[in-house]
Image (tube, rainbow, N blue to C red; front, side):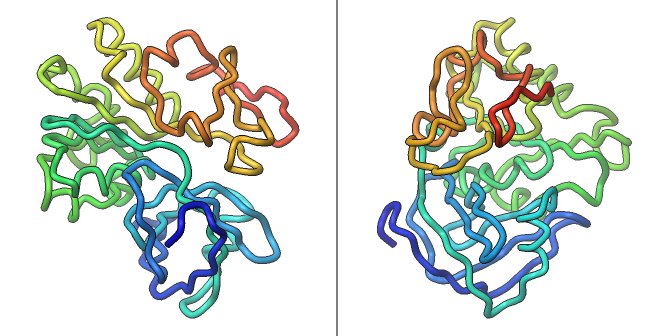
Length: 254
């Protein structure tokens, strides 16, 4: 599929992953790098950025009007998709991935690329752990749940304490921003921010770097074009972990 050209895709299958996360499989597939995203048009509702969880799937957490409308669609219905856009995660011989909640979606194809040696997977509770069966097949998975129903009882960031972080070529992180900010604090203490990559989520209107709605302070870097994956050293003195902006550009504290 041509890069960035708007396409109509057909939903072929929908899989319930957790109580509020679904994967939509569609045809035709995309050629992409793990970590890139597409702009998904839900007819009559809105267009939103979504990470690709495979060449022919997006994994959706129901959080707003567009995702709620998407969750009500059925196989055979059509979606509009533009992309893939942005950069992706840097591959290495030995990668540590850290995923929280639906943040496992862009990390799944990275794990399947055979470069992720260890993946730290976190969720609020056991039945919200995403892609555990698939990840178990391709990498070493360590688990944390907030309520202790599976794995470590606590935040996924606690699992980092038992690892030699410096032994990894790259660290790839995606999840709630507060969780990612905690990861950045830990790696910065060890002087490893420069080889840690974070996938950011920001409000986007165009997805191609024109509108400026996804720019981050103070650098003005555009999440859609300069990201969505950023090195930790670029984020240390930014809005990351503190606030983001809504559709009108107003600051929203995290």
